[in-house]
Image (tube, rainbow, N blue to C red; front, side, top):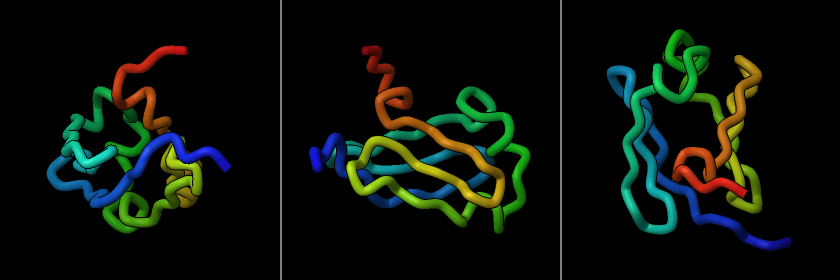
Length: 76
């Protein structure tokens, strides 16, 4: 399986998604990237899965997906 990105250190605090992608710290305002995630409870926000390929992050309790390329502004 191809590894697209190395994704680590994911956390949400005060409406900001912080994570490390390929060793670079990224911060995004949740309202800009996912109103559903912004409105989710702390428990819903804290339960997530990173795809084995590093392609995306999935929050199963609210059925929300974010692509890492999308967070980085990469278009294919």
